[in-house]
Image (tube, rainbow, N blue to C red; front, side, top):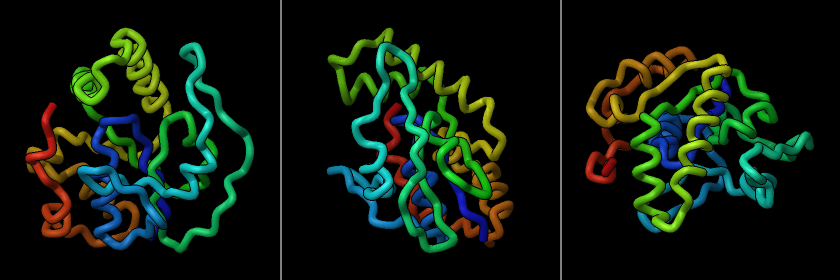
Length: 176
């Protein structure tokens, strides 16, 4: 199986997609857990990315190499701005309608600047469009259309299991 980077933006359903890869046998390392669900963010990698954020609407990225020793095959969830730092075999881009992402972000963080978040979402979608790889639309996925995730998993060298996909999806958590 090939190593996979799940390219995402916050509130896009990337934990869902990464969890499906983990259920199919990819290694995620020590991951973080939200109060509601498993986030599938590698804690060590996240710590290396910590402290870097967006400044005045521009992406600030580090050119430092990552320090990690993964077990192969691995899957790692990263934002669009960090994607160039990860030596993956395959990119799986998590797509979600920008208005759905915005609604989800605003529901969790009502005091966030809506205009800033909308611009950030648009910029990340533009960056994602420039990345070669497989796209998985999480709204379709939750609705039961598994064609995109199936194509991505099979392209990465694993046998697709609908039962494993269904075991990860919890439609009740999909609010927007």
